[in-house]
Image (cartoon, rainbow, N blue to C red; front, side, top):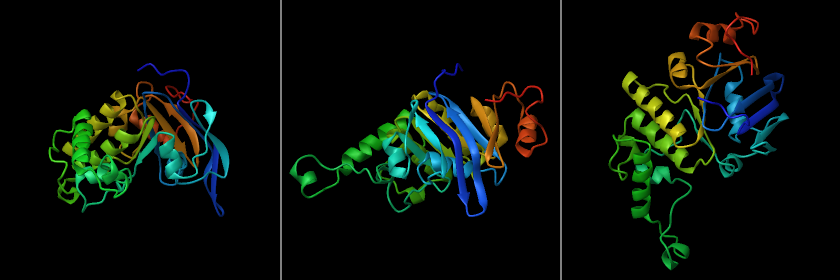
Length: 263
């Protein structure tokens, strides 16, 4: 794909320390409109902390985050959501006992019009179920036809689809996904990968954190490689194969190696 010149979301020189441990050591990141950016790195590379900074869960000690070229303070998850950044965590953060529609609108419940909704705060379950089905259909989720079904009755892939649909429904700019195919079988993993591609096709930019290299190379437009709290390279699947990406990630290959481009 053709990457626009101006990043949608940027991180510059982010530093985050936990006592004597430096989780982020001046890391950078650029996310462009309409792209899927994969973030990879070994355990302890700082990728989870980086994503927490971008999603408002953690405030960096140093550095700057920019949205549309201007500085933005994402000091809470609510601030990130207000900026159009939604996150699908590895734990999914769904309520198993609630139905699909209630999970989709969790914290953003629709109320009935007029006095009933304004004064008595009565929820409009019918409209939430209609809207939930519309959002699922827009992403091509055909395995869920009853938005009134309890989430605890769904498979792992279907639960992931509900979480992704919620993020796509309310994220106006960016959707961040943390290990979206973890603990899923082959068939459900590919369904989730297709879902991620459809999220991008809907006009959103996507950041995917994953340890699954085949999945990364299947869907990513660019790959951000994190090591020891810093970005060491940004490559594309066309210029770098999986073996080289792992070598860069572990420090076995340096930036001067062929077929590797630093951002």
